[in-house]
Image (tube, rainbow, N blue to C red; front, top):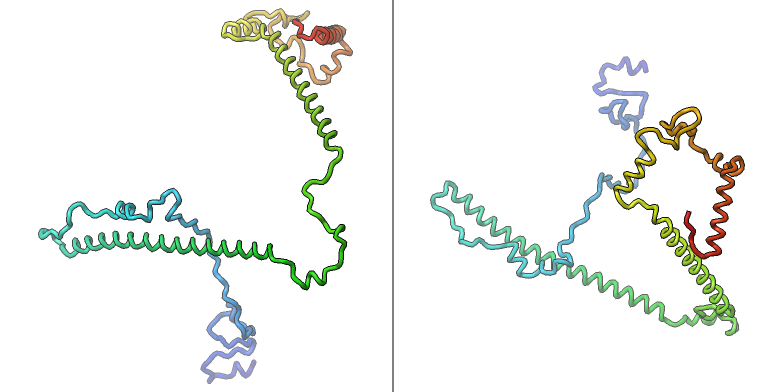
Length: 289
């Protein structure tokens, strides 16, 4: 290092602590230190393009079969009704003439472009159809070709009776019995549903006399349940019937489950409900309250 410091006649910078030959990069550059590179170059990496390309529009959809015809071309490239000429009084006749030429060129380009695109579409469709038919024919030919001779000769010998046979449906000796049982279960279920439906209709008919069908009945029921003054149903031994909380807290699930065990009136109601159900089963109809 002393030799390097005492050398004053050198015209280039010399660094004895690195093997890099590039003297124009700083220490922060990845090329500051030479790294051996492979002789064979790698494949160029494709740049990542952000986003997605939109789906190209179908130029000749099935609903517009008239697009490649001459009527459609005449409709989209209509000629001017009057012949356009350059006005002698125009301030820029060259520009006006250029505009007329560009309009004619646009019409011609649209006609030629539609014709060329339609011919390309027809050729592409024909290629696709021919390729599909070729693949289908090749598949059918492979499926129908006979067995190769070497496979037939090298195949292990098997008795013909042991060879697998194509049988679409396995034999079922108990099929009729199973079908009869299934049909009986279905009929029983349908009969049960019909009975339940009749019971629901009878319950609806019996309870229809208490339904609210008019606005007057609704107002009367609201006045009965929520009167203006004192409600006798909310009265207890200590307070008048001005608040529903006089009856106590709403019953919980536990209280409803144990109601028949602790209350004699509740047990009486349950027994009456059971007697009512028994009478309905005996008479075959619904009983009123």
